[in-house]
Image (cartoon, rainbow over all chains, first blue to last red; front, side):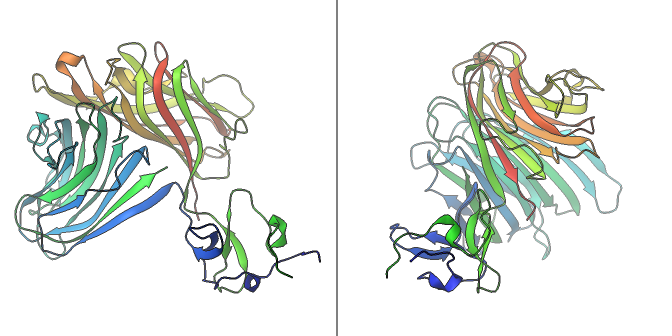
Length: 214
Length: 223
């Protein structure tokens, strides 16, 4: 018998609105689900006020050339705190050697101040401490920061590992601050972990997502 | 009779190249859908390459009205020649040569690890005013063993024959000599001042080859 057309309910899988029809993990049947594109969500962590840091300590390897982290509505418990990042390069510590750059623009709510400037207190010269991503975020109910950071080829043992971030912060003194941060983890060791942290108090709330880009 | 194989055109939906078979919004039929909005189109890997070119319709490259936004990712672009700039240019449909008219802005800076010096400023040496040269997106690439640059370039609606084609790039790298290495960055934006469709993009160094590195082309769908 020639099969001319298969109807949606001829397939031995329960139809789910807007989901794709794909082979299951054993490749011996169908299932309904999502099909990853070039940006693949690898992990989501949600801050709940119980800690000072959010750590991605698995899934960063040679699977993807580029990793993308998004941090959304990061709200500190304590007023006037810094939001930082650091990298793990083979040991258990987040202390990779980094040389970085940092500049930002700002404009306050009253409209009286605005500028673009390099910020020497925000950069590192072969430092192992945390890298400032955003500073002086307020802890008012609606105050927070959001942004994204790209990490390039962290598994390379030939080249240094570049990173590049953009954040926007609701500053404690009612400024919008757009901060541009980048640099590299020096040396040829693979980077296999990323840790975001806050300088004082806990991260009250916020969402962190890690994506792999194929 | 058990059915062991389905032919692609057995499903009651019109096939669309590169798309997945999906249940529709009512879960009572099939439709086609993309896996995500950002689709990898082509990967080129440099190996002492004079240029890395993406040409619509060649070697599986799509650079037309399929997507409203295209993104190029640069990963560890390593220059063969010290102090070479990493550049791009485009060609429009029906023309020849990578020499379209560009007006652009270019700023950047550095932070040196050796002496702590830092800089942020407009880089007039890297902008163009109706120029037809290759557009700089990373300057003074060093060719030390661990030196390279990474970043990305967006190309907006290149198929438009009404508007100019805008572009924006961000790059980061390890620059200068190895005794005083720096974290170097550049931000570039501008437009290709043509109302013909841009369908070819070329990357090359200002001097010497692209010794190593990866450039990926993605299409970003609007739905």
